[in-house]
Amino acid sequence: MRMDFRSLSRSVFEQEIDQLAKVSAAIGPEMNAVVDMIYRSKGKVVVTGIGKTGLIGRKIAASLASTGTLAVFMNATDAVHGDLGMVCRGDVVLAISNSGSTIEITNILPPLRKIGASIVALTGHPDSPLGREADLILNIGVEAEACPLGLAPTSSTTATLVMGDALTICLMHRRGFDIDHYALFHPGGALGRRLLTRVRDLMSTDIPTVKEDDIFRDVIYTVSDRRKGMTMVVNAEGVMTGIITDGDIRRAVQRFEDIVNKRAVDFMTHGFKKIAANAQIEDALRLMTTNKITSLAVTEPSDSSTIIGLITIHDIIDCHKDGILP
Image (cartoon, rainbow, N blue to C red; front, side):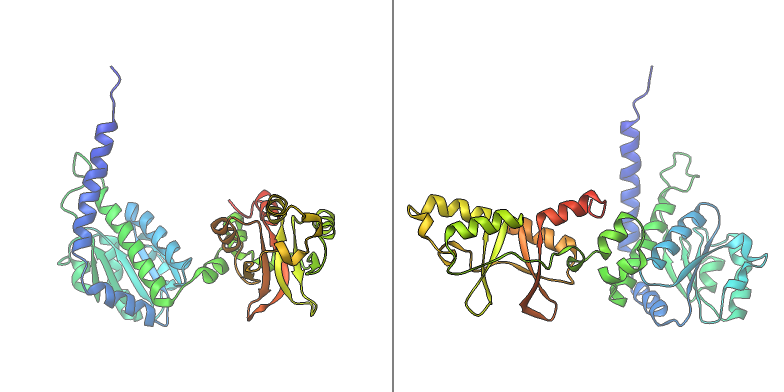
């Protein structure tokens, strides 16, 4: 008979969530101290561990490095065979060992002190050799593993991973790491293209315009001829005072009996939406979606009254086809 493992799977989730809640509740002022130590450090963060904790350590180092904290991973086994050379005075070493007694970790503690590195322990046993030697401790101790034998690292490695995530996010806030910084560190692939693409990269500087006094027929001609689904409206001084879209035209036809005699100023939308040229494409899409519109006037970043271009939903759709937007 085939077994149904859904119940067992849910039990694993429940056990690990329960353990994570307890680890979370135990976080104290030491997190503030660790964040401050790393932030003020003139060196880098060196994450070290072996085995499964080493795999978690690689992820922590990668997360730190991609969010503004200079970080590398050093396998503790390789460290005693020369890789300690990557550690410099002023570095902060995040040493991961749930037991705190991992021989490969404890063997490199004296050399790390001689080099002049600070040591932060991620351990479940603060009174262990690692805990006693560390400058600061982030306690990842769990009461039980989710493994039915209580042997395979499960809850403990999850706690280590989440503690690393928490540290990463705290440092992001401490550094004021924003989406522009994130884009700088992620230039490749669809994510990088999406973050790096700005409105100015897709906008058109060829803006369809009609005058406020132009009659309905001229407006229709401009909207159809320029194939933007809209036109801006300018006054006698050449200042853009409104916008007319396909939707405005349809509503005007329904509203006015003598539509052929109406001027652009009679049915244009006065409060048209704008977006700065340095805004992200996703910001433009969000603004269009929220206001149920298909085009935005683009302004100079430092002067919202100066319109320099136009971006439409079709520009963004083409961007999507190129794989820049999800």
